[in-house]
Length: 593
Image 1 (cartoon, helix red, strand yellow):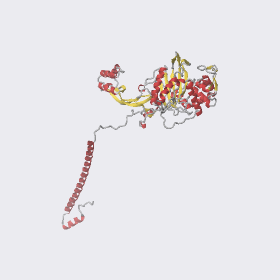
Image 2 (cartoon, helix red, strand yellow):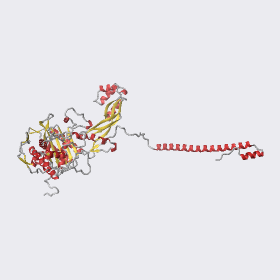
Image 3 (cartoon, one colour):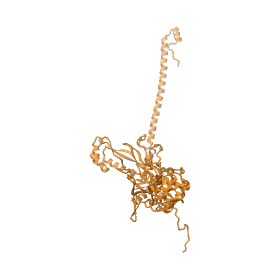
Image 4 (cartoon, helix red, strand yellow):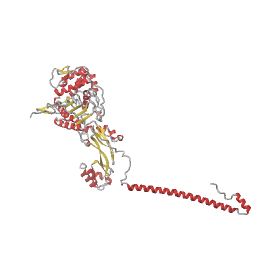
């Protein structure tokens, strides 16, 4: 904009020439300049007022619109959006192979005290003792009147107990939310699950951690939020597991045994369908390990942690290896005249045997002498290699934290004498799970399987070959012969074609040597023998029954009939129909009236 001059030279000269006043021209131009400035300022102010008015209008319109939305919507309590507590996180469920809950979480509360806020120490202590009888009034009163600022009263309380504490009405008794691990089936599968406890604790949360079994082995998986709560699927069948434990408990009581264990495994996949150990415990209230021998503790897993000399169940390994190596055939005659001496050590049979028997008869009649002579043909090195191939010389890789501790006990000097005694199950201590793995690998067609507690999907992975299909078939026929006409005749179950081997081993003393009247009785079996699907191993610790006033401890009278009852109960639960021939023709028939 061109600024108006106050004293234009042309007008000033003209005014002087005409006798006018040049100052009047300057005053007029100054007035006009002020009017222009006033008009510009007014226009600027009017524009600002319009913009400010528009802004106020938009602000009031926004507030009014939001108020209208709130008025038209349902009222609700405001919720705070915040990240999860760093201590507590939902632990994933554990389910069986059919999706049934084995372990889950339950929301509960803890009870703690701020002694400095307790208003009536005597009344609070008496009220808590009435609610929790295991607490002592003297201890609570001393706590409430002492100098401590914080102490736990109970880590877990029920809703009913929480309400009862509320009714005491003392502000020094406070509650904190937390999750607890719940095992809805009680003691069923206790040794598999292991149990859980609290790690890091706060007044409003607690970290649930696994302490044993699969709970501890899969602790990182179960706590990992990246899994989005996906459950851990085990290979165990809850129905079969419960049936096995029930029958095993009855058998242990009937046989007056100190303990018992049983394992059911799929021979093709290595999946553990059931694994039971007695005595057991309730993982909801996991006990403290008692002092003394760990074998006496209910926490001790006899099926996996217990390594024992299992006796004659090993004889099928010796016979199968000799057949596979071409050293013998099932009909080869073996000198079984006893006793058989190796140096000054005699090898004897449990009862009188013929002087000569076939390899088939050596297994079915359970001859120690015959098995020892077959082992001599095999030799030390080849026996070690074969047993290692079956997984009998190393800890199992099953998914439990206790598995590495179940290391087989090998002879310090694997001599020819060791080879002889190991051939019939003495001198090498293994767990029941080792035997289940070895039987499955030998008898499923001859391919090695690895035991697992995790449900496998898809086609089974074929392991390395341990024996030929022909040798595996011959071994199955031998075990079937043991049941139909040998030492395990009480294990026969009509319709399920059971094949198996009994084993009775003297129990070692803590100071060396063996007890005269204590044994470990075992029965290792497959069913059906012609085309096996499952392997069952059952073990009794120090069984004894009386027959005609005579004590009987051998597996043929104790473990074998218990194994038969287990198969009779669980085979239908596994979807297996008995193959029983009927003498009554099926279908419609005419009868004379």
